[in-house]
Image (cartoon, rainbow, N blue to C red; front, side, top):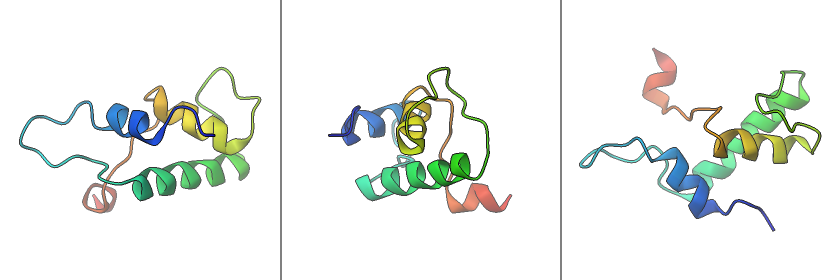
Length: 80
């Protein structure tokens, strides 16, 4: 089982969204895609951004997201 849960991760990612704005993450699919992309970056050699980085790359990616070390950006922001 994944810890923290999808709902916890979504809450952390969307915590800075102001009322009336569209949330950054709207589905579990978005969380899964973001963590898997970060895990592939770690596998490719990028340095983990959390202290406890001895686990599997996916676990490290989830910890980074939960600790707000990684930010999810939308397609519009990525192009800029």
